[in-house]
Image (tube, rainbow, N blue to C red; front, side, top):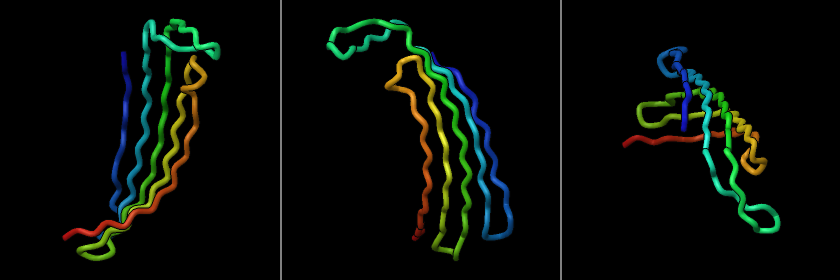
Length: 99
């Protein structure tokens, strides 16, 4: 079972620069999912995850063929099964060429 919400927008700063912002939440449940403990014996648990994310991207149109994208993204997953809990930060830079 999944439920969630995501909201985002793009703001045009000028003719060649745009700022993209987004955030989201998601709740997931996995009834009677099977996992293995350290002794390799299976057990069943109702797994529950809560996921949140936030992104900010700066898009720069260098010229008609080239675009430069910068990205900062943070996500967090809380789970009652420890191996599925994490925090993640991504910083990225991409060059895009259109032909």
